Length: 399
Ligand code: CTP
Image (cartoon, rainbow, N blue to C red; front, side, top):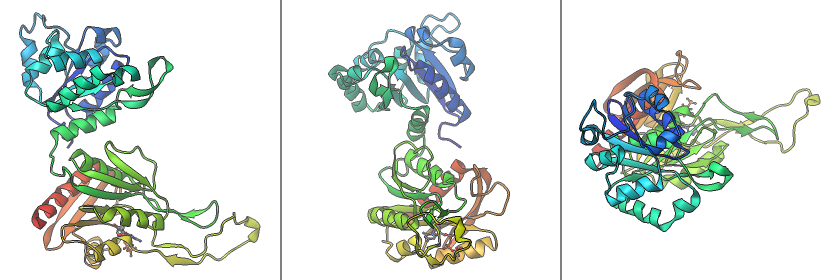
């Protein structure tokens, strides 16, 4: 379950060209189980219609302090909210909020809440960089307001620079971080994802069926709980918010990247499907088919996880995966012991909807001297949540 599930979230929309993106934000929050109450300023209505925003939220849009059906909404909305998100936030809204002005329903709601607030600015680069805007943001940050900084890219009118409203994914991730458990704040987590590709010649590789989705879900979940995440990946999925990406291709590249990051890591999760064998002699040019046939000699790659197990420090938590088709638990337990792991995430990849390429997974979580936990078929983010819960328990026991 997402951290926004069951929470009442007021989404304040101000008058900027990015107001249309608030519609997608509301839809995503509702899809994740939040109760979304949209509030629009008068100028926001110049950019998007009430009907669209109402249709994709949980309640009709509210715009006025003077709504006859509800005579005191200015305090009620703020008091009810578990979280307020302002997206997009104009320079005008940021100034009013920093200055404590209550001129309309949104600014009243912001002043009436004791809950957390996320402000997502969107404006032209010159305005974003203006000292008055930056000073106002500094005031808000000091008061504990979370600022989701704008992205760089094409702005209205064709200019390019910093000022585009952050993507709905980044804003939802910030909401999950604010509302979710913060049990990984400052914890350094390294996650690997995807299948490695080992070159045969200039165009051909030996690959495997791993999509990387489970590793990405673990990286996203860890970041949303406050971890400092390095994701070492062979695939091109969208990088989760607040995650540092290291792109690699072969087992040797992955090994080098993991070893470089693991020294200072508190947790390493090897979700990648690392090749066990690679061509002993990769050919630089393309092998032509008129060769008829050729022999391919394979050699073993280094076992990254076993290497990490050898040099594991007392405080470090090591997590491996075991994708099996037979004797799931026995094979996974053997890997756990052989590689000195604290946790093994084992899945039977021959079962329907499980593991490689699917959006769903069903796993067993095995730990030395602790009863096995079974997670039946669910989405990969939910599996990631269970994996992070287990890691949190292991870290607590080590401390
Ligand atoms: N792994 C690794 N380096 C390798 C091979 C595997 O770090 N060269 C890691 C995987 O990322 C996974 C775990 O080891 O977390 C188990 O991988 P798996 O392929 O299931 O097991 P193997 O140890 O390779 O054993 P087998 O192929 O015999 O099942």
